[in-house]
Image (cartoon, rainbow, N blue to C red):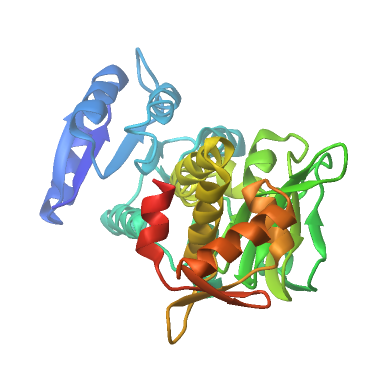
Amino acid sequence: MKKILLIEDNQEIRENIAEILSLANYEILEAENGKIGVDLAKKELPDLIICDIMMPQLDGYGVLHLLSGNTTTSAIPFIFLTAKSEKEDFRKGMNLGADDYLIKPFDDLELLDAVEMRLRKNEALKAGFKKNAEGLNEFIQEAKGQENLDKLTSDKQKLQRFKKKQPLFSEGNYPNALYFINSGKVKTYKSNEDGREYITNLYKDGDFIGYLDLIEEKAYRESAMVMEDSEIYVISKEDFFLLLHNNRLVANKFIKILSDNLAEREERLLKLAYNSVRKRVAEALLFVEKQYKTEGKEGTQVVISREDLASIVGASKETVIRTLADFKDERLIESQGSKITIINSEKLRRMRN
């Protein structure tokens, strides 16, 4: 049973709304003012909040502001009740993160429709999404369905084709888009004063790229280049911030999607910074295997140039080639050109650890 918190100072209106929602099989929590409502929301974590705007002590705007700033309540869908219909009130509420409005007086059907729609969209946005073009489109369509997100059109979500070695963005430039890989491979890297390249991460189908600098509105701290012919969605900066700023649930969901691999990436970079060359090559091979592996007859296969592998390891190409030769002698891998077959992943993991 879905739990709804109703914050309304008018007892007659509050009891009438509570009765309608109870008949529709919702569990109702009632608060006669904003302060009690905030406390109840933090304690009970309802599935939806319906809140009057004009209340003594703490008005609806104050309630929404306090709940939006709390990590445990910030994603709860929020519907305002108001007797006012001026555009300024709508704009203020939406800027604060309200999900919907109900203008008094409203009938039973309007109330139930608004509640059902908001709960349904909330469940859809809570659900996971496939890490491919279909999943991205599903998420964008759900976001577009939120109030005030109708300008998020597919015109700016065009799928672009990039050739091998074509850059996506360069270190030092300012971001103006978010990138989503539909198919292909992309690397991010940093370069030192001598032009030597160090690969910071590898990306594949279903990954977003370039979001941290975009969120912080800072220059790129690394560069990105396509490793093979790829298809990539370029999501404009305006659309990205429209997603983040205009709906609390969308923002929370999007941030979770984007931050999935941050902890793992930091751990991997620390290992590559402090381990021996043998351990670093083992770590790099396992990382490439996880990102790009295909199944072969003898083991998992990865395709990566010796230059790129050396850039991940942070060692010279010659050093990496010698280490790979040792691994081959030890029957950890087989190699042919840029194709490496990992035939003993377990021993590589033990070596890495």
